[in-house]
Length: 272
Ligand SMILES: Nc1ncnc2c1ncn2[C@@H]1O[C@H](COP(=O)(O)OP(=O)(O)O)[C@@H](O)[C@H]1O
Ligand SMILES: [Mg+2]
Image (cartoon, rainbow, N blue to C red; front, side, top):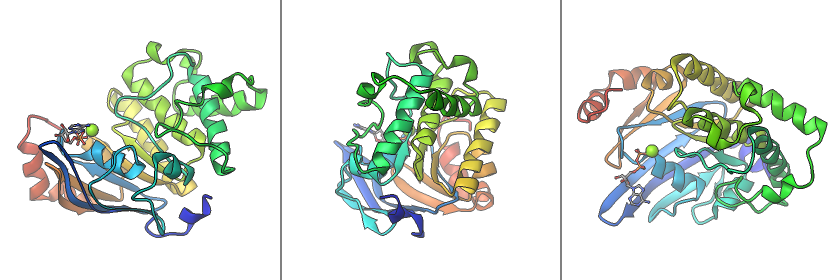
């Protein structure tokens, strides 16, 4: 199942994607691509269409026009669950967690889900973990706890592993969603503003972790991020959206110097 994406280059492509919500053209013929082993960033002011693009890529939103390719497979019309089964995982800007489960239980479930997905057995929802509650009743083995705890510690959530989502800060909930992507063993990971709510040290730690993911595990990472310092530090290629249009793309150095990017950011009330 996963091999379809392994050798493809680029691993992920969105071509000429357009989507409209009522009177809002949220994306207007936007094309981006991402390679395995690299961090591809998607930036732009609030409302630019970044989260919408992640929705079109992951299949939680249906674009009006355009093509989504995972490796050589056209998934434009595939369900979110089909795309998840092609080893794609994502986080949400508003984390989608289960109130009744602890941090550790979430991670254990996500790891089980990943195994099921790779075995071709699991039909997930577009949200990937929300319908996994039945798995919890089987009890958790020591081995599952050990590998979950390793991941939880790696994400800096060690002291919070027995807490439920409502006892976490928003930043911690976002970190937990990153942990879930990791636990599933996905090859393509889409992160929606994972650093929002984290302080500088936590953000830098997360950045290093995402970099390791990409370089050591050859993961394809698409990073939507407000923190431009983080983006410029860890990404290979940057795509810039403004009002639903791709206004520029290039290396971090090129985008740092881009007049179009400066204008887009100066034209809003955001100061990042
Ligand atoms: N489900 C939706 N219904 C209506 N409008 C939406 C919906 N999702 C996003 N939008 C609009 O589409 C535009 C892009 O939104 P979004 O992708 O969330 O931007 P970003 O993530 O870059 O801040 C915004 O104008 C937003 O209000
Ligand atoms: Mg967004």
